[in-house]
Each structure stands twice: as structure tokens, then as C-alpha cells.
Length: 127
Image (cartoon, rainbow, N blue to C red; front, side):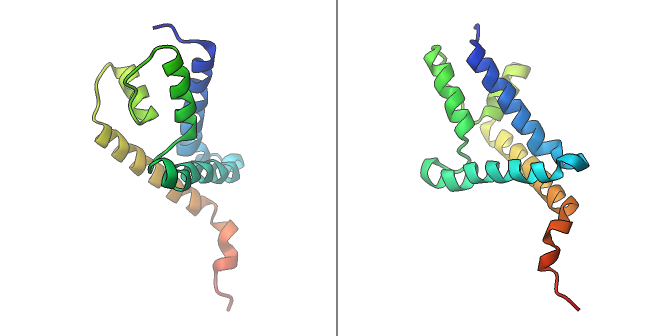
């Protein structure tokens, strides 16, 4: 299947956001940016997810619209599953992909909160 430029742009954006979510906290200059990116991701998954279903991603929704307009059908609920299956040629379990995504994202958020702990010093009790 040949993909149009818009679909390739969405692949690039998706992969860039996933890389930022997972690894931007490791680069000191990008640590504040990381908090913004994971905050936007959490907002989409949880707040927009109240309306559209937990884990909703507006980027995936837009990407699926483009792919469907190209005749692609039976898209999974997760871009991570779609990309993993595309790369490996497997039909992976949506459950285990979601678990791996959630665990990886949780580790990245926890790590980010730790390395950005100076932002939260106002929460510490004063002596």
C-alpha cells in the first residue's frame, strides 16, 4: 500500500511524540518540555477519554481518518499496536501492547517528576 504525504507526516508526528514521551526527560534541556508533552498526552488519554473512551488520542483519530480516506480498513484502537504490527509483521495482542505502553509511559512520567522535582519545592514543608 502506498501512503500519501499526509499519512507519512502523521507517522513522523506520532513517532516523535512517542519518543518525546519516553525519552525527553533524559535530556536536561528538554525536561520542562517533557512535562508539557506528557501532560498533553495525559489530557488526551484521560480528559478527552471521558468523552471518547480512555486512551483516546486525537492524533491517532486524525491519522485514522487519513488512512480510512485512502481505503485502509480494520485499524486497531492503538497507534502503538498499528506501528508494532507494521514493523514486525505480527498481529500482536492489543491488551499486551496497551500494558507495555502504560508501563513505559508510567516509568517515563515517574522519571520526569523525579528529575523535575525542583519545580515542586513549594510543596515541601518549611522548617
